[in-house]
Length: 300
Image (cartoon, rainbow, N blue to C red; front, side):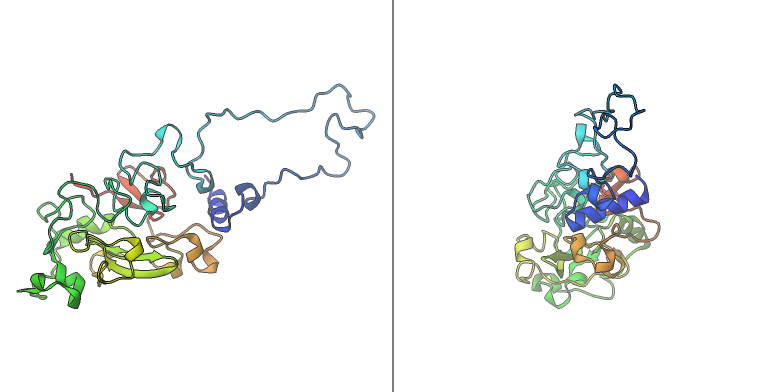
């Protein structure tokens, strides 16, 4: 799909108009003066009267839609194209919140099998309350990703007393180069490597810790309640910040939440990162997350 067509499809989605209207299509256009469609009563005398009017070829009912056109993407792509088997990869809005797969703020990776909560549905994932590994790799423990980051580094003064005991911010908040190299490419836009994310609800951003080991009852409905969704400070050394001012989507945002100057162009991604509307737009081994292709770093 060319750049113009892609921009038109995003504009149509944002403005609530048809793709044809947004991109210049118009079924009611009159023929230019002097040109009369075949078979018309006003046809010129020398035009063959028995020439049948041309009819457009019918499109087969089972012709797959272009999954790159947002305005055309159905809940389930034809024949399961580009769809996975988990709730965060199956091309379905499983929880009915209008966000699908990687655009749903609950989804952390292609292996995430719970689109309705910040838990992933992966056995053994995000179990450690004290030490955090890469939030997006589908398991707990830093033995395979080089990450061991204390929860209090993320929660600061809001860190639970049982975790704050013997916490040393100098040694417990160090990040290895291995951790950063592994986790940062697979981090959802708007999040740090450990699940501290800027999530938008009803046009308002909230920076909260979504790890179910610490905030098991955090939901989008409770996002503003620190008792359920504790505020957090994302680490600047390992993360993927989103910048709405640069037309980048954050989790939970829609195009309507971006500045007005972004409304007629596709959402942006960091330099060198491929924009996407579905994972089909991404290279192999990547996942479409909030409109940008990120590496799939799941280790199961």
